[in-house]
Length: 124
Image (tube, rainbow, N blue to C red; front, top):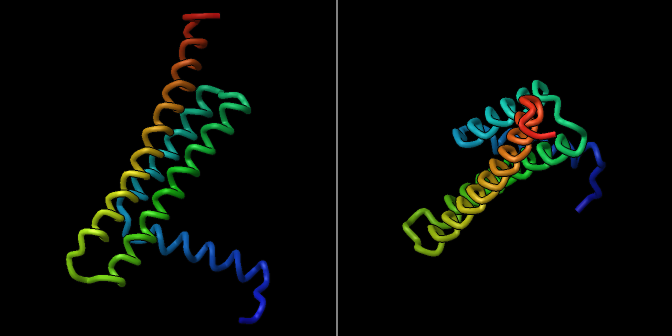
C-alpha cells in the first residue's frame, strides 16, 4: 500500500465525519445541544477549565455517535439477517453513546449550576 500524505489522511477523516453525520438524526440532536452548550457557556462566561471540560464532553459525545454510526453501517453489511450478536453489538454501541451523553449532561449541569449560583450570589 502506498504511503499517504497527512493531507490525504485528514481528507479521509473529514469525509468520514460527513458520512457519519448524514442521515443520523441523533447526531443532529447532539450537534444542536453542543451549539446550545457553547451559547450558554458564552452567556455565563465560563472560565478556561470549564470551557475545556465542556469541549471535551462535546467531543466525546459526537465521537461516540460517529463510532455508533460506523458500527451500524458495518452491521448492515456483515449480516443482513437478524443476528442476535450483531443486535447486541448495536445495543452496546448505543449504550456507549447514552453513557457519554449522560456524563456530558452531568458535567454541564454542574458547571452551569455553579456558574448560575455565582451570578445570583447564592455562594461566594
